[in-house]
Length: 156
Image (cartoon, rainbow, N blue to C red; front, side, top):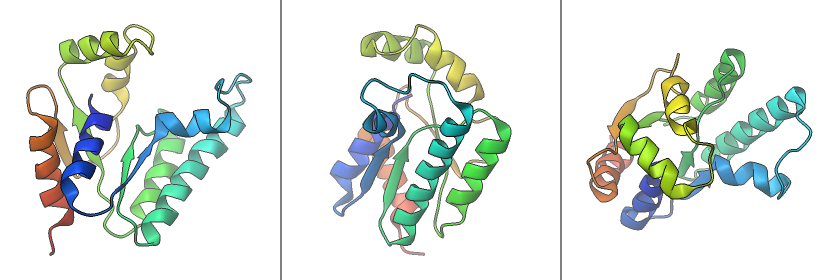
């Protein structure tokens, strides 16, 4: 949907340090080959631990952009949202784009199974109340980044 590109644009335009955490980079940091033994308890603890780490960075006074999707499983999704919402100033932003755009970007990336992005887009925001939504189909990353920076970091 353009989450990483948007996060990098925000960093470039912010004029202040913004920590960009990519969920896609977190699991490979654990095991460069990926998790080969599918252990649902381990995966749940890893996901919760990642969200606790995000929250702790936010509590430390760092401005954090999280580039990732919440887990599909409702209980785990709710737990992760509760962890993040426990940090003052947390905003959940839905980053969307048209299905045709998702398919085109997915093909250009070449690192995901065909159709994965459209399937994920259909379920990623299910049951989640977002504070803001942006559509990357036609708007440039810089335009959206400026909009988000104004919304997220303007003094109250």
